[in-house]
Length: 115
Length: 113
Image (cartoon, rainbow over all chains, first blue to last red; front, side, top):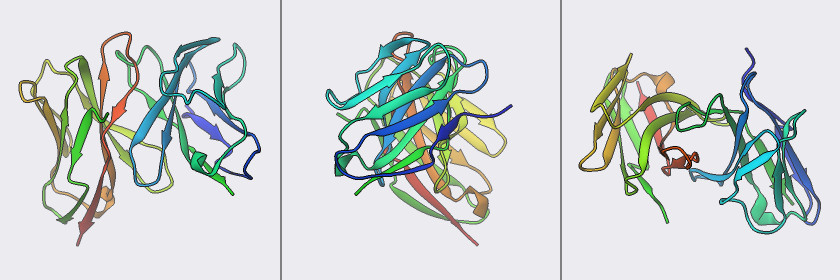
């Protein structure tokens, strides 16, 4: 039973470019969460999605960031016009049920470096 | 604002000793408290979790102690081993309708021989 998969594992972008991060949840999981981890800090919630719906995006920056979880395929976190401050590890987690009743399982993360 | 405070920031424990990490929360709506273990370059892995209807939960060498009135909970690692060296995060999650995990800032644990 494969765990949460994320790709790419490492991504280097120049300032102004776009970054696309992909997350495939565990089999059977329909709830996806994205978190960001800055160096030497804890994880900060960004967005919670179910298939084709954004449930909670209260942690997403208002501009340049967007997320989707289509009916088919992985969840995508998209960062437009990246800046140096976007450099971080981005983790995706999935759960079988709403997280309040089920655990969240994390992927290995995508480490984004903006040069 | 930070809603889950974690201490210490780093901890060094001798092999075979007990490692203790503490967390405190503010939001009384939290009702699920997991601990995650993270190795360098890896994602956090769920270690153990507790709900506020019990004061203690034990799984192998790992124990969570929970004090609802004080709004505090702690992770105890008994017979600590070098393989336990990692960063540990406490987290908290609210009841239905508030599914995001709020993480503490992490504790870097080092077990020395």
